[in-house]
Length: 318
Image (cartoon, rainbow, N blue to C red; front, side):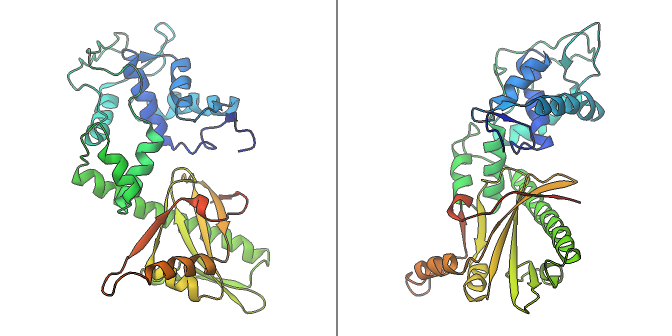
């Protein structure tokens, strides 16, 4: 971010799906109809003190006016009856997603089929979107990979620490899809580097071998090799990273091993930051593992990206 006080939704790491849920919760919390100023405020509450830039507000208006309307979650704008109104399909979408995580709206609220008639909220409707969506999604993603930090946060959720099997399986599937998509972005990035003659050649190892302890191998012009592990998230850069013991061993022994952090992924664009030459980092962790009693072995670690030294942001477009 160039200006931490003014950000777009993309710079803040808010996915389209997250924004849609914030929009719908805001409409519900305002009695079934909300103005854009209400929606701006609800989104800014997720930005840790930052405010939406002009571009951020414009993209949010487009998301409501086009995407949410096209999905059938929000009624088309009516000049005679201003405000954005949630549809029955929009309420059902919230129920399907949120009740599994203990952040549900009241399913007993009367749903009006008439977009000009505001829905009557029950006394149990929240006065604001009830959940920090960035935190919720980040911790669900972490928990889907058995991350203890994500699990601890979800156990303290209003649901009483319960996440359905279906929700967790879906999160795991989403993580796999995101991982594959992240590799596709890196493939495109390396293609461009090869075309620019910045690298001699590269191979996508994980595409042929799903258990390989790295994803790509770069051959430099001096015939040295760099191994790359891609860690991807649709969310924020600071979402936790998971590294397997197998990857740590390869990291320690490789001539050079880099970690590519892909984040803020959408269908056409993603952000990339690179942590280079992680041999010493891996050796430090393995030395700790080696002190465990015989017969005990940890399979993986999770860590905050702040524990590694990453380079500047690179934007990749497919």
